[in-house]
Every structure is written in C-alpha cells, then in structure tokens.
Image (cartoon, rainbow, N blue to C red):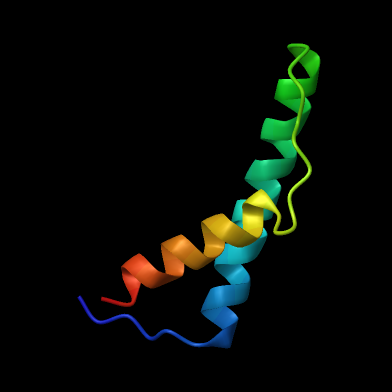
Length: 56
C-alpha cells in the first residue's frame, strides 16, 4: 500500500486524535477521574505516534 505522507495528512491525524481526546476527557470527568495537565496534549502525542508508525 502506497500512502502519501504530508502536512495535510498530519493535520488530518491530529484533528481525529483531538476529537477523540476531547470526548475521552469528558468521559473521564463524568466518571470522577482527575485529568492531568501535561505540557503536550494527549492529542499531540497520539498524532506524533500514529504519524511515526504509518511513515514506515
């Protein structure tokens, strides 16, 4: 499978991760869990890891 990796793909991955992270954070708060404040957001870390793995 051939996949073109560029800035647009990275932005697409980040937006998807950010949408997930926001919903997951709402879920954590509704369950009474404490959401830690990090220097990098969960969605930023997820996007970097996913982009790294699909880059081959």
